[in-house]
View 1 (tube, rainbow, N blue to C red):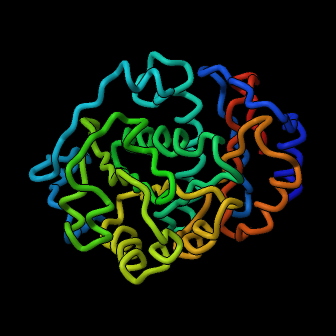
View 2: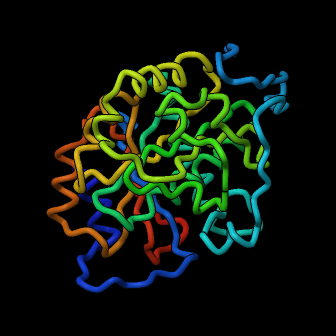
Length: 286
């Protein structure tokens, strides 16, 4: 906890009353606690994977992403010409090291309040992980009240998590490949009523268990709801292996951050990503 407090102090997180606009090239810094932070076929995942880790998408629809749309929405991890992509690669490496040490394969990305950039971090992290030859990644939009993954990626699909939750589609029907090797997206296209009850349902529990246990090379990233706006995140977090907290510089008060940390289990809190901060690219705190 002292390491987290030191990192927050160094980053000079300040509260602001106004809705300040931040530059899209803002760096990402991370602080990971030192004490926390085989291949099988999976039912519902109709992909084959060769020894190099490349995936041949047989039935999963491939939707090519628009590079201009990604750039506009600050999705940068796929572009090595963008200097900000290296921040996510560094974050990826630190996260994967800690996850492998603990045999963790599912990670929830949360924030104290909305507008912290957790969805952007989730997407960029998933893309970066998928670029590792021996890893594949699944990004699941579990922010059922305000799903944004599809919007940021520019994805429009007929079937989504909404249909899966209503038993109108199987999991394989709502998965897409965004034209990036070793990456699968499970989008949620519209808000879900009674989201907390849905996230605590047996269907969601079985889904998380399936994703974690049946495909050992996969890292599953869940874009989760903000912690302080509802009980959705608190319902979901006990079901995942580890947690990454995203805080936007100037968007959360110190009391909001402390309250959020109070709700998060300390043993599997990987650390904090300070988003929307103008700091040096090498300013990483441990």
